[in-house]
Image (cartoon, rainbow, N blue to C red):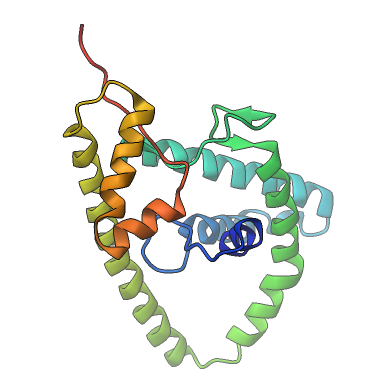
Length: 198
């Protein structure tokens, strides 16, 4: 979904997301949370819309915070947009969460579940195991690559966040295609600098 948005915005395909593969787990978790937590509101589309906004906004905020703590990088920043909270979420992204969450709950998920119910359980189990293995391998590789990015910023001796971020991007763009993909997926990524003792 985000890749399509970026394509129409920038006229080129960008594989968005933390993982190497063409998927964004944050959206998958958002959809699962909406379906699991909001079933009791299925007869009230307005409440379901509002609750979709709340659930997805909390998920996006916490994901941004946890990734920044783990990897010392700010993966996205909405500070320049109106009605943002600490640059991690903003109204401009929250409203679409409600619209898409409502669409998924009432239209997309029932359609997908119809087709899934046509597949024999044994086949579903095999497909699930294969997908789980792919995701775990991808998660392991991606985590390893992103962890190495922390070391890059530590080795640069410049006293400016903007300059360090620029230098890290240059170094990553000269590395393998996987590193370049991450830089392209998060063009506004900011390196979080360690505090320097006086």
